[in-house]
Length: 430
Image (cartoon, rainbow, N blue to C red; front, side):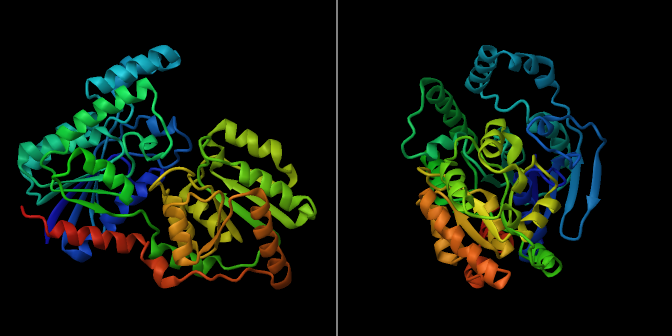
């Protein structure tokens, strides 16, 4: 059994979707000859917003043995950020200046201090423990530098896993970066070329993200390892969650961003609702209240008596809401390539009809059409027409039929994606 050290700033109980990806590797790698130890920081598990994710936690070192992996949780204080940066963030000019200067110096994300929290402990740990492979998972971006330094110092093969790019605007086909973003991206890419040099494997969640990374280091082996859903978890939850709704339940579970086109959703719902008895309809927007402008748009345009908008809630509750829906909604990233949130895969795992509006004409559309898991709409009229068809079926039968292809959906399980990853890692020469 070969040992792999997974360094992940985000890991459960952190209430953040980025924590689920490394957990799936920790839980599944052992089946394929890799024995994982995970290094992370302490989390409270009640993080409900962006500020909570920056909250310090100085709980002492804790080591827990799980069935498939060892978990090491470290205190985290972000002392440099709290001492020098937090006050700057109250003034827009200073915030922008400080951020730009930091990037130019290769100092990324002091509010997510992976280097500060982990480096000293890891240096001591690696002096005492033999490790065959070293993996870092980003975000945060600074964890890539940490992996590079440790890999060079201890001569351990490095695997770098990207959930996001340094600038996801690079995935926007029509986006033209302003001068400030171009300057930042120049320095981001300057440093990543250095930190990724000598990596044994770089992986990311879709082909377009991998291509952007290959631009920087075409000499390093790359791999697409998609996000996914925990098949075993959804199988267990589905067995206990089966019920028929007394109201036709349309749900979004997860963050909606101001940058997304929400006009098809809002105008489409208005058309759908205009001839309906609102006592028969429930509109859930679970976890979408993180951005005030999104919450305001939903609450202003949709009927209060049938609409629920919440902030972030614990994952177990969010999954329960996912399974209780008749329809699950996702707003495609129109104009972007390769951008698929982990949420779309959880929708697949729930086995419920998915409505994508607008379509991204890219990876999300491909996944939905390939699996038969739902439908796509690019106009409010098309959106309302699809909902009306489903509503009539629900009124007649009490529930909706589902035509998703189970075998094709299972390709996107985290268990399957972890297998793809582990087999590739095992081929790395030490």
